[in-house]
Length: 154
Image 1 (cartoon, rainbow, N blue to C red):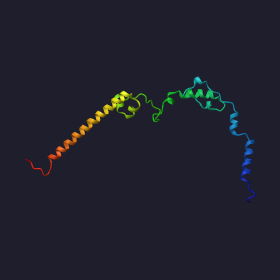
Image 2: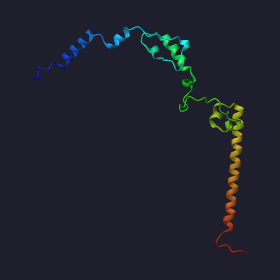
Image 3: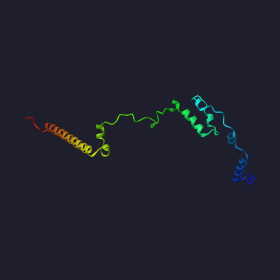
Image 4: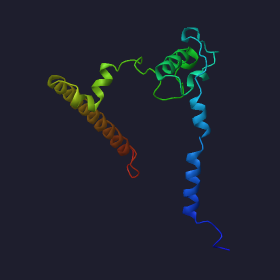
């Protein structure tokens, strides 16, 4: 019973030979002539564009028809949910004060004079913060001395 079955490779080879003898349905369609196409100038968004997709239509004509179709604002608007479709050049520029506070801008964008000014400003700010911190500590120490538990009021 197993010998009655055709071997796999023999069956595959036979089917391939038979397939080559018969013209495929796709090839029959390709041999047809292309459909009658309207002039590209008369196309609108409601026009039928499927004729331009026929394999016998030249690529240049197909491209012109598709350009006509996609030039309509309905298709020509960017997707609002696409992150790279927006115009991100219309924002407000970074102010000089914010730019001066950016460490990366100091190292890459500033000249030597601007770097020196920014460094001096940072040192002055650090000194002012240190002075304010010392004043706060002194205030806390004086309040702690006033509230000593064993101290008697005089």
